[in-house]
Image (cartoon, rainbow, N blue to C red):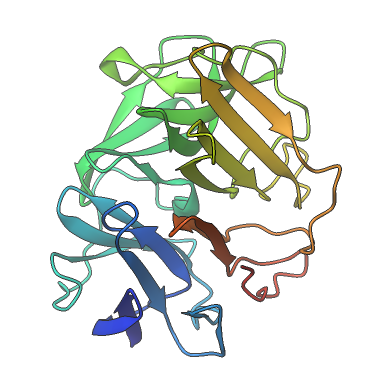
Length: 273
């Protein structure tokens, strides 16, 4: 069984936990799911024994852990982090769902696959919404500035950022410039926070490019009333970590914490502060 920590205090156990992290209340509580291993930077992590892909997120007042082993999805939920429901199979998601690409804004959870955007208000039931534009959704990315963002491709195979709009349709808005061809299209780790000057910022680390290459890139999205959205590649200064996908990242107490994830050889990485 995996242990559950809130601000370093164990509050319960669940099955099939892993190195996922998320904020229950922004800036106040951090919840860790982990299963054995060495303690570093306050996080304990280890590869899932079943080799399953997992994602932890908050939806409504439920703590959710979605697991996919390549053939089926399993969902674990809890209201208090102590008592956990038996796993169920969520309705509506593809059987081979890349669960690490699920994004939740707290009220709804989102996932994209081929021509559909899947939307859920409760994690056990997902509604596929066919997209009416010519944009091809590739992956959900993050929440930023009260919007849910995804990476999409147009008919000329250029990459763009899109937001979820009316009737759950993806459209290009806010930042409308084509993306670098090596921008991550899946399995990136992101976090939204305020800079020292109180500007809204989001950081995007690692992930896979469209060509399938794993990345150690770092991108910064910033918003201000004066200049709107600005996306900057910080990857010129190489970070201390190598290529990484599926890591966990959270902004907590004025510090970005990142840990877990795998490298090119599918080896788990040490956490980084």
